[in-house]
Image 1 (cartoon, rainbow, N blue to C red):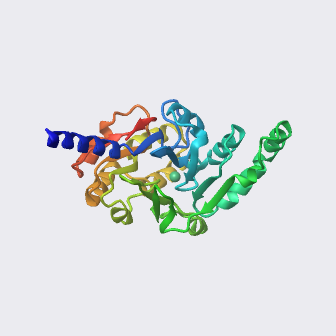
Image 2 (tube, rainbow, N blue to C red):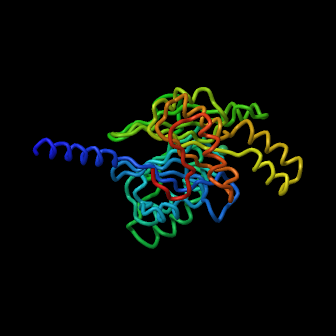
Image 3 (cartoon, protein in one colour):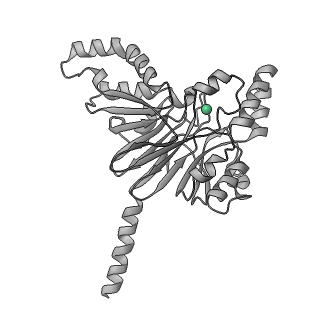
Length: 310
Ligand SMILES: [Zn+2]
């Protein structure tokens, strides 16, 4: 009897340990075109009661609310790269936190340029801060609250008592035509080690050999995905031909097909694949992606919608 009790206690403890970390997909659209069915890219990694944000596309404060997460409790923000579908609202989120009562520091970690972007945001924010600080003495100077850090990857970029975050450059800007842009602008994949799980976010990337080792044995691989025939069809229909040509080069070289996500997941032996940043992400069935992943990967693969939890 005692041993059965012990077994049940063990199961309960294991279940509670498994619940320490969860991923909430706040925005699953491959942007930047606004969509009524999917929000711009953002994910919350919730570890116990702490919220770490990975990317902050337009509307992220609204999506946090919809997920039942208090936007004021986001303490750390990580930006994988500086395309506007990923970075549009990190400053805005910080500002809304300040305006609605957060008084503890907020830190954002992003590619080179993040620190100077914070200075730009503080300038943008200054008139609002001046007006509110005139209304009430309860508002501290926002310059003391917001902090930005340029990622100096590869390797460990952040650590606290709950998570260790490592970064590696992925292959999102690797094939660009603008050499200067390639030299100064970086795009990163991020790996979070929490007390009970390893969660890897691919960021935006083409098929990238370095990610096989980086994602090794992850419990959850949150990976971007694209269907090239579907997006090409949509762009040829909606855009001038020369614009569609340029964009197809970017889509082909700097994003990842579902088959290639499956190859990576199998090589890295990850336990679960969550597909997000879906392009085109319109009304195509999930099987467009999951069937292709399954050609190469024998674990579970799910196409995320906004506000799912994994
Ligand atoms: Zn991008």
